[in-house]
Figure 1 (cartoon, helix red, strand yellow):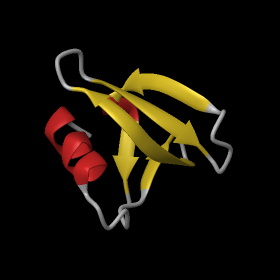
Figure 2 (cartoon, helix red, strand yellow):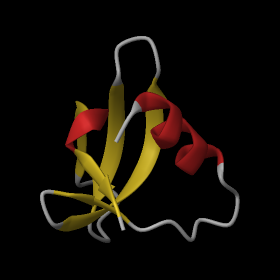
Figure 3 (cartoon, one colour):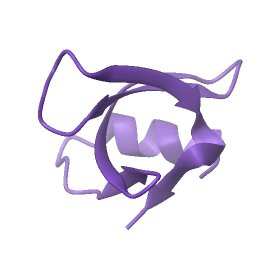
Figure 4 (cartoon, helix red, strand yellow):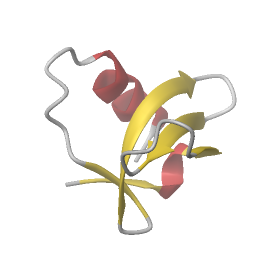
Length: 60
């Protein structure tokens, strides 16, 4: 995924976009456009977050 798409998903108020990190469902919590990084929540636990390169994220 590229930074522009990650930002669009992050800003989407419907929250109906399926995003995965290495096969695990994630929720985009923040996007750092300058550095191409995203903070994501892995699974359903709010405390399980990771900051990863947006290129590691997959849509659908």
